[in-house]
Image (tube, rainbow, N blue to C red; front, side, top):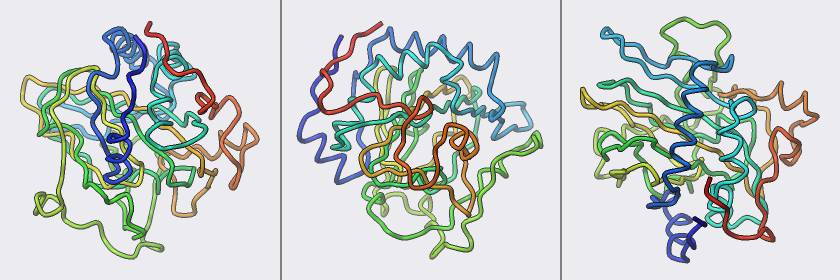
Length: 291
């Protein structure tokens, strides 16, 4: 099964809103592959893995990132699926590098909601041409899915972003931390106080659907699960034409600066090497095979 065409209307909507839901973009074999990869991954997480929430009932939210070097199922998805081309078409980029994978696994009935934030200000790269492909591996209702403020990717406001390092109930040492107070212009608004006023959107989704969002868009939520419902999500992060490596004084989460340096990458460089590989270009053949 090859990538269906990304339509001009979808490209325009993504540019305008910074987020779009794409239905039936990945066949069941890809979902099965990623599910198997996640099972392998959870048995042998990276040193970056941590629990973001643990409630009195023992329900948790597991998170980990950049596991793809050690998980062959993830490697195959990165290099052989249509994800890179989806990113390239929506970003309007001539070349797309893979940045990193991240997984989010919530126990059934978890009530933990991700704080509202942007992604790119935490990253060890800088640029507008960045996106995340958010793929649920199980059905998810709109009320439980990640939510977005359309158009907020266009703001130049520097928000006082939350420090995700405090989400560490197991007191794991050396987790990545950030502090935006020295550069912040305003607090992130209380979006949940009036979601309609902010135009918040989310969608019912099934495996094979994905949400693609610009990494500067305000987003949060993806919690408050029903007692019988868990949520497993695989995300992939992609870098387009204007992106440069950027090591930030306010902290990075996840902080890949040391591993980037070990690959010879430094602030101001374009992505590259086996760490941030070029996966797709506008001269590539369109359409990629299903497993």
